[in-house]
Length: 269
Image 1 (cartoon, rainbow, N blue to C red):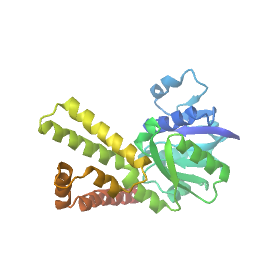
Image 2: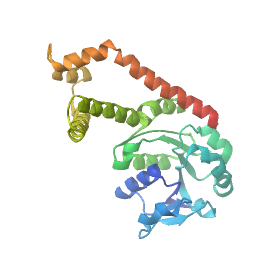
Image 3: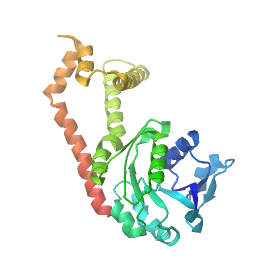
């Protein structure tokens, strides 16, 4: 077995994002990609990546096997994993809702890492939350963390329950933020701005505010107060948000995502 070789099973948006981050960070140059859609691999034709359109015994030479397929596909590929994988290998799953116990049950493999990344990983600004079984060797866990850090930042948690909860914040979070951005752009258009100008103003305001939050030593409340003058425009908007109980609305949104995550997990498992 080659301890530096990594296999990706599934090469969609997230699989390719992880691969690209890993390559930019020069973590390994030994990669095998398994995907039925060979069109996804066109851009990699002149690299030293190996390709397969189905799982076979070739994968048993990789120390880490990343499962980057849709959750609905897992039971099918598990039939091949149990045939061709060994307990010396570590499975790294980014499949939402598929539990570690389910992966163990279907593959008979004990070394499992479960990861919840998010879409900003495509530009190396991702936030990944992960956990692992006690059987995973430290070298393998360190490699997983290094790969996740190549696509942004990562946090290891102690339980799968925290993965499910984090899914609602960081996993689904970009969708919620894009929705709020979309609503602000539409509001800008309604008050008389062009779509182009409204989009630029809102996008840069979100980007700048997030960047300021990241580097500032001030608390959120202090940053908010710095924009708010008594009787001013910001105060008027914030008062309206308080009036409609924005905190509770956001909680209900997050809780809806948490509940759906639990429902999907039960359905899949």
